[in-house]
Amino acid sequence: MNKRLLHKSYTVILLASIMIASSCSKILDLEPHNSTFTDAYFTNEQDANTALAGAYAILRNVLMTDNCWHMYGDVAAGEFKPDGNYDAGAIDVASGNYIGGNAPGGLRNWQKFYKLLQQVNLIIDKVPGIDDNKFLDTTAKRHVIGEAYFLRAFTYFYMSRIWGDVPLKLAPDLNADEAKNIPRSPADSVLMQCLADLEIAKGALDFGYTDGLQRAVRANKGSVFALEAHIKAWKGDYAGSEIAANEVITKGGYQLVDSANYMQIFIGRSMEGIFEVNINDGQSEGIALNRYEGGYNAPANVLMDPFIDGKSTIAWPLNNTYLSNIYRESGDIRFEKFFYQAGSDKGQTIKYANITYADGSGKKQPRMANNMNIFRLADIILLRAEALNKLGRDPEAIVLLNQVRNRAGVPDYDGSVDLASVILEERMRELFYEGQSYYDLVRTKKLSSFSPVSNIGYNENFTDGMFMNGSPLGGWLWPIDNDMFRDDFTLKQTPYWQGKY
Image (tube, rainbow, N blue to C red; front, top):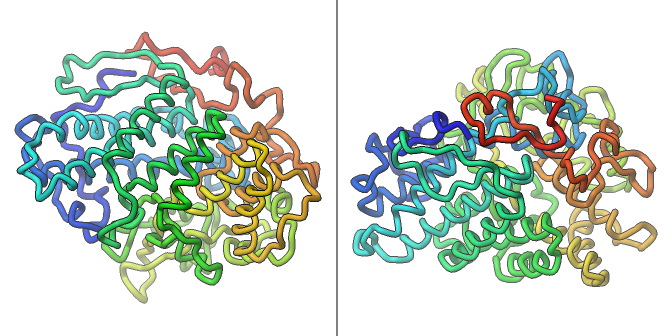
């Protein structure tokens, strides 16, 4: 990790352009500070809240930069068939060519994640030392601390799924001149640290929200257990994953949204939402979509007319082979709700098609007005079903599977196909374009495998020789960018990519 690129404590990183919507809770009403992040800065509740608001803002920026949430989790899974005229880099990613000349270099570089970790580590380091009497109550203080631990665990888990071994940095750099390069820590150690952080977060956070405007856009205990369920499933600890998922389902107060209101899930703050990144144009905070052909930002890569007025091109049309492989049952409400003109060469996914216009009827300044889903209840229900199946508790797994299927208008599971495959494909149907599919395929060792029904590969671009799931070389992991080696001799390339990049 290049020490010149480490996240310096005196750098102002709370930028107004990436602030989370100000009206979603009091914590986010705060203006960015010009103060340095030193002991003098962290003196009261407002300082702690401003720092936490900055962490959420940086998280949003990280996940939106290079469209990484969708590039890592959706494009790599094969959900789309990118058009090289508008996004040649996405073609490389979809084909597993992570070192391709067109693949955005930023996707191979983890420095932006360490900017977030620097901010989170500052909160963890400094906020506990603020006098309790500087807060309206101690609950507010412990919530800030708990959310910081959650964000650190989420960030490291996310990074480890992408690169495997990553440098594990648990303290902020308070003096840039003393910042040191550190080697990559084994993935298992990184994940164990994530779980340790979540144990602290559990004790600091509560289920539910006292302010409905905070729903899902600030982490709570439900978010913590959802993340724990995912980490333990990734590690193969299905017993632990099942327990954590059950905590979310039985204690979190979440509810599946009725299928008639599916799109409310993606607008945000629904009763189904567990953790999501706030992006809301109604609060003057939506992401602008540049008004020229081929130059729209995410999520407009997947959208054109009639959803964005006057836009006649689409960078990421649907992969019809992928869709026909997983959407085989008639009457699936999601196929109608989630897609437009599927089967054509310009099929669109319209989950995130809540577009507004800053200039009103002029329709020249489109804005995105959807939140980015990270965890929601249907995800955790299906993850628990997966865990129950792995534990040999199929009757319980089927009950959960059918909850999600019934909402979508799909008949109950009839036992004619392997249950594990049905659960996986149900996740792929339900969570299409939600940043989950690639990790699901890797976790279940199906990235380059075939559907037991259609005998078609989930992603026809991958071969077992290239991306053998579970390979000790980690061929499904990403390389790290060559530029990162210039000033950091502690780094080693991801094994699969050594000699290839």
